[in-house]
Length: 157
Image 1 (spheres, rainbow, N blue to C red):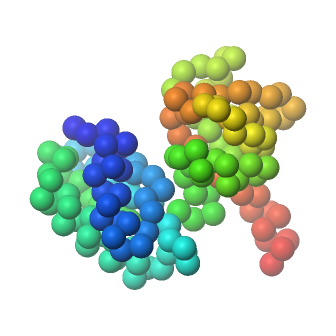
Image 2 (image 1 turned 60 degrees about the vertical axis):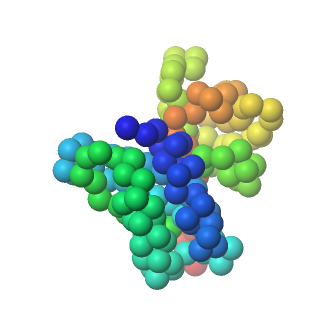
Image 3 (image 1 turned 180 degrees about the horizontal axis):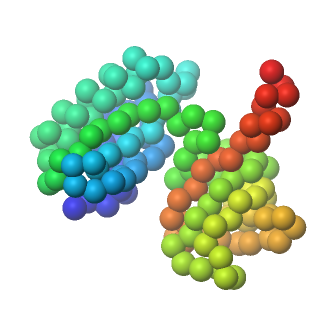
């Protein structure tokens, strides 16, 4: 079975042909309940119609290439406020924002980091978690998302 990175590379040209970038590809579940979730973004955001259009394009690629031998459901969606962070540029764009990171391995006794992204430097990011600063290598980050402050967003409305 292909890794999510290889699936991303397989599907990216199809999304780009329609004017969208793939931010992340995630698989969850097992057997008949497997979900292949693809997050897309575009210069003007993403509408439901955009998701449907990209879904048809990606379905065609997946049908021809057949990279996943088991049954699965394809979901194409916008990244939302808690958008996934998978590329260096994604991290660079949100320096100063709150993020949630999960690492492959323990780093100073922990795998989950919920804090302020302070910097992106070389092959790592620096995160301040409640006053403790951690430097995490990109290669060790298993999953990362923007973590917006919903209370602050409500106050702004």
